[in-house]
Amino acid sequence: MTEIIVVTSGKGGVGKTTTSASLACGLARRGKKVAVIDFDIGLRNLDLIMGCERRVVYDFVNVIQNECTLRQALIKDKRLETLFVLAASQTRDKDALTSDGVRRVFDELAAEGFDYIICDSPAGIEKGAHLAMYFADRAVVVVNPEVSSVRDSDRILGLLASKTHRAEQGNGGVKEHLLLTRYSPKRVASGEMMSVDDVKEILGLDVVGVVPESTDVLQASNAGVPVILNDESDVSRAYEDAVARLLGETVPLRFISEPKKGFFARMFGG
Amino acid sequence: MEKTANALREQAIEIRFGQIGLVQVRVHTTDPGAILDELTGRTATAPQFFERTAVCLDLTPLPKLPEVSEVRVVIDTVRRAGMLVVGLVQPVGLMPTNEQPEANAAIEALAKALDLPVLTHFRAPNRPVPVVQAAPPPVAPALPTLVHQQPVRSGQRVYARDRDLIVTSTIAAGAEVVADGHVHIYSTLRGRVMAGAHGDTGARIFCQEFNAELVSIAGVFRVFETIPAELAGRPVQAWLTGENLHFACIT
Image 1 (tube, helix red, strand yellow):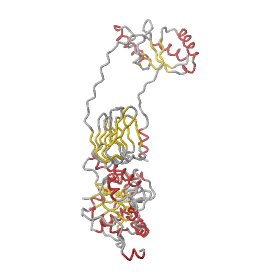
Image 2 (tube, each protein chain N blue to C red):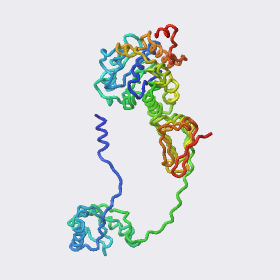
Image 3 (cartoon, each protein chain N blue to C red):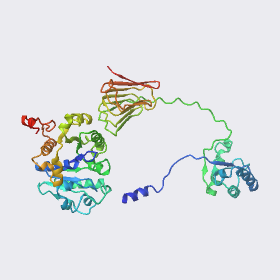
Image 4 (cartoon, rainbow over the protein chains, first blue to last red):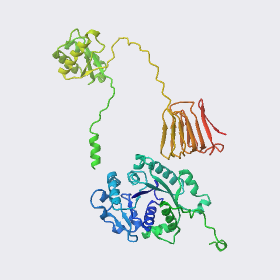
């Protein structure tokens, strides 16, 4: 059975595309057949993060408008056998997406035997974001530990509970997960940043992952290698944990408290 | 593109019902000279008001039913005075009851011949309206309380029309819960709450963990820029006396 997961947030710049890329890679590394789709028509980024921008010939809009087949548009990842990218169009606008077209693409992917479809939602609550979430079975709501991001995520959670196919059918609705990104335990400790518990309490949801703030993310983006593939990084470990939790494993939360400094570090200001 | 075309096609016409005032011209004679004299005299007093005004012809004051040709002359005369005849008045309530059906049929036939509509619902002039004892307004059946169990997210709104509201989950900042009756919140309130939305000043608000943005009862509201320390995060009740909103911790 194909499971459709939307990665959304409402607010821009919180790490939706980074998260989409990393979750897709993480699932593919565990042998799942994964398609990751960029819904941000006109402002495509996912292909850059995935490092396949020079291999985009046909895109999502071409498939929807029957200008090519799905197979022609799916870009096979060079690192992982079972990972495919469907890029957004850079030249069209968001009206090029249609509900029927999106459904047809999902049906075709299901027929091709994909285990997961990851939908990288654009920011905002307009058509692109709406269509990205509409057919989802699960949602990963990416949130930064600050008030405006939390407020926007709350709005998105409201839409997930009312404006999705599952909500309209009344069959249990979309399963919602919270993923905190750019989390800095140090700034939480000093009271500058909201804590995991604050966010959990306000949004009334459990977290599927907490990703620490790190310069590794920017480096990974610029290199076109999803950050989860950088095994040296805490960010990678945090995303691996999130993937495990999405697959139903119980993994304790890491990177939510400041690492205790050792004696030498304290002495020499490490 | 196709979508725009569809939208345009849907908008080609719109049919709307509305009421407009209509001038009636009651015709006492079919003599064009007399009518023209009278009408021009009237229109001269307020030329802008009567200029191209739509009028409805009431033929019932005439001693006998006019011929189609006679009515055509009357219509022409009215037009020369600057007004436009758009219909004939149906003689409902304007004739003795026994002549009514006959008169209706005659006016209908005239209207057909003249290609004009027959307009009804003019109030009978100088006829006392029979006084009907107004029936007491039906007592609204008491509706069961609306119980809302999902979180109310920012931007969402829950409204309990004509009844009380119970919310068992968190109300986020930027969310709104409204009831015409009381509001009970068995969770954290961070958004807006309105009780007695249709003016019931006896409506109350009860809340388990108070962090509201705005509280309103029967239109009297208070905005909380900062929550008073004695209320913040505590179980709170709000009620109205006169124009004053009161808040107290439920202990």
